[in-house]
Length: 191
Ligand code: ITT
Image 1: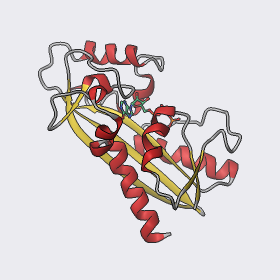
Image 2: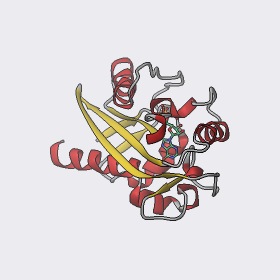
Image 3: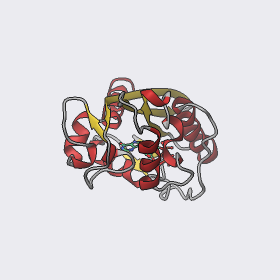
Image 4: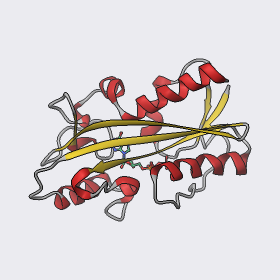
């Protein structure tokens, strides 16, 4: 089955590519000639995820999947959440991390979770798949791997941040791999 992965985020592609089964032939936005920014106009991760897949299906006519994801911090009422990519006003990960740590200064409840929602559209039929990993926010960044907020997120059961994990270690527990696993099971069982 041929599917477009409707994302411009290379880190997402790098994490998902090793998880793709041989039965799925994945095309990128570059492969289909889509270079414009896909609109994300909604206030929830679910709705933005669906908007991205619908944009590609409706404008380019390809079966596809997209994902929207974010870091939800309990003490910040779920922020940065849907605003994770440009929380500090830019897409700069270091600035986003600094703003989170600033907003968390003096707060002892460090509970947080990463959430990913994949949207799959095949012949107009829409299905969503959610993955969550819980953990806590550190006091300072640590590690050089991963992307985004990985240097300040320690998943439950670990003492290291995601940025100190190898890609395979992160994939064993991550929000993204959990959600993608549900998507591939759905394809294998239903399509
Ligand atoms: P596309 O919309 O093109 O897919 P994007 O980067 O705009 O790419 P999102 O709107 O879904 O994607 O924003 C997700 C942001 O959440 C991402 O830029 C990171 O800041 C953060 N994030 C998501 N998953 C993460 C992970 O596994 N590790 C660290 N940060 C993550």
